[in-house]
Image 1 (spheres, one colour):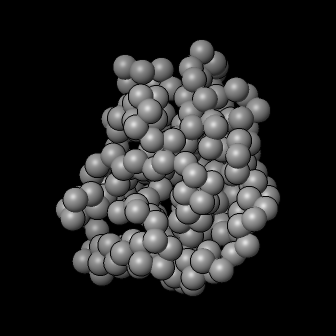
Image 2: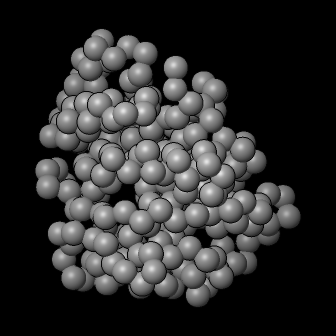
Length: 241
């Protein structure tokens, strides 16, 4: 049995999914994985189900009817994790942009009490740790995090980061039905909500490497949601959170 669940949303990840599952299960700490699968037409789910026969007590799948958004995928995974008794849940991409070796470091940061939430940060101490991104996207992401800090006052250098370890006590306090954003703004909203509830966020330096196989899900629509959504967070009524 493991106390930690890695939640990985997938849509058309057949090139990566088996490799990343085997990589995680080869780590020195025992992790369980939940694949939140959005009805990929490329057969991603079939690969996961085949591997579930090899790892019946460690690998699980939650199948959804289609692309319902990154935020809802993680929330569905967190609900599943809470109902199955996990103490820590880690958001991780399927495409190796998040190095699975850092799972242990994120877990340790929460397990040793450094934070209630541990963020795999690309922008710690003024350094930018991103590989293979075009300059335009790199600058957009870097200054987006600066913008989030300016508007919200949140002291998180990489507010848009998607490699995050959550402790059970944080997720149990959150009201998932009040989460409004489904794209990458979800990452900002969740961190900001955690800080408003009084929880501590620590940052663990990572190197983010853009995917080599498969297709990125980033779009201008997702970016706009994040940009304008940040402003709305400041004016939200937090009394019922």
